[in-house]
Length: 458
Ligand code: ATP
Image 1 (spheres, protein in one colour):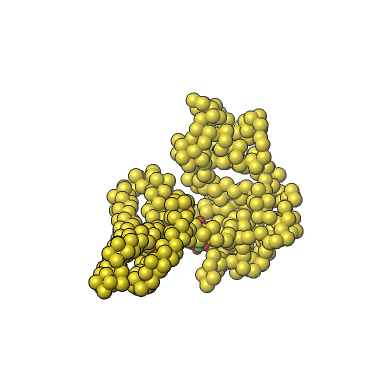
Image 2: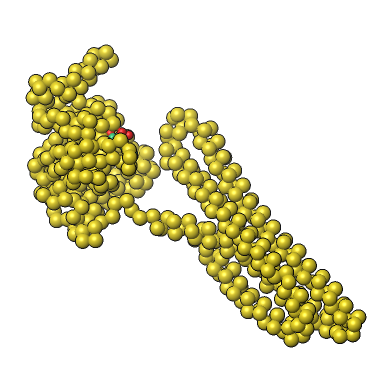
């Protein structure tokens, strides 16, 4: 944006003014001596062609430069946001090599743009010098022949010199303009990027959900031609029902929440809430009523109070925030912090333990009052003690809500009322833990395998 503003103010306006000056100057020169004026025009087509070619090259080089600078910023942001992982895996050297590589490429691209701009300016200087030499030579012949006085020739040369100033400035600004156009194109590329999931033109705001949920004949692949994750999956939950979803790794358990939150749409089939296809409603109004508790909830570098309040989607009182924190087993650890609810937690909640972050995330969900909750194994990364505190909070949170529990470890869902086994893109089996073991199918095999693995570890 800075490049664009600078060019509009400092290049575009002077360029337009220069066109008028040039036309005026040549008008006077034609009146003074039309033959010499015609000779002065000879280099102009060459100048124009040279400026056109250089502008194109500068434009391409500037686009490359912007792309390189984008990669540079992405590497810096990624390494800083995952600084703990970078340090603990001793990736500093690798990241700094990657950064130096991107930085070098950006610097090369910048150098290339500057070299092209300087080349354009020098070639225009050369052509101006040629034009002046031609006029001098022809003018001298006319002076010798007596058809022009030396004084008129001097006046003409001074006009020629002044008229060439706008041409040289044009060369200077043409480079800047090409660079700015490249910046503008990148901005418009980003602005033109349409969201993958757009609301239908007739989409309405979703009413308050009762919580009945159905995945109907769901066919889904992340990309065209990619291996399908679901090939006709059916799953139905009554309002307030809890279902645990299990299946081998990479089978699509987390993808269920991705589709429910409309981060992607299925290629075939639909997801219904209270009997309506969720695409009938505005996506934001659907998402507001669905709570996702992932394995490692994201916190922001703000106070605990703001972290909790921002998720509510409405104005919340301090009393409500404290009530939600108590429900989530978080009130005691928050009040033990030096500044209580005003304590600012580091970027991504880095100053809190994993269990504390998860309890804050539960408090956030409690404030959101969402009738449908997806738990994507929120205790997977915790030790036994934290797991117990988080589990207790979850048990209070999920009361009277429709809940999908995505389970990567079977031991966490033994007590679930209903377990759904997904495999090969379909819902294969459904029942309680005891029923599925008695059935002796896919679930029973997975359970035996996990039990054996635990025995080996003991
Ligand atoms: P796990 O138990 O290991 O967490 P999962 O059952 O939750 O696995 P998903 O995360 O839903 O599995 O992934 C299902 C499939 O979709 C996997 O093959 C995965 O590689 C693929 N996948 C997941 N996310 C994306 C994505 N954003 N783009 C393309 N493919 C993806």
